[in-house]
Image (cartoon, rainbow, N blue to C red; front, top):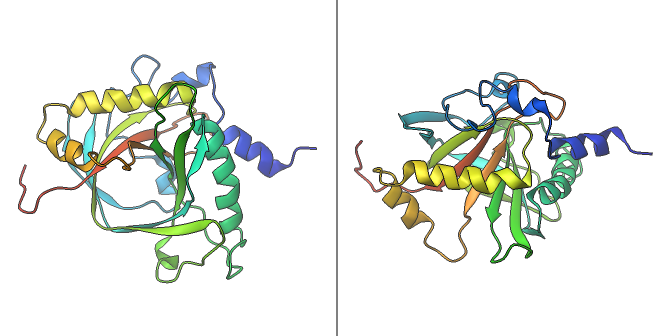
Length: 234
């Protein structure tokens, strides 16, 4: 018999073709990422990493995140972001429920992020690393756990595109491509291209904020992280 947790995991990242996809802060099908600057309502209820918006462009915004810490899975090879995120969420949810070396429970945070390294072909496995944000209270000494590791981010610049609905495999590549097109030719594009020049670099990140039971005001994001030169001014 399916458990409540298994249903939560199933629903968290399940694809959908329903009209739920059109009831999200005016982020409608065919117009998914045209609006930016929507503050995820989830972050009014649970802890999220803090950031400043330093620029708003056509279909994107540039944020500067403060230093943050994430608990992350090992790379998961899968043909599906949905499948990989489902697998990883089980492991990470167990971690915050006390399945860690300190038997310590940790508060749920947002967003759940999935770092994506696409495959070379349509039927080849891509690589995914899924992470939970570590609450500030736990950052001085986050508990360790088998199969998980801590990522420490310094101040980080992120180009962001928002879209609504329930994340599915077909849309994320399109949304990432749309974000890259939006920033092409801007003052940010060279820094982004330079940051993604390495063979082993993450191509993009998918950030999901909502409970699987929420069908209104859903906010998802594509992130392109990058570094800026010292002394850069807008």
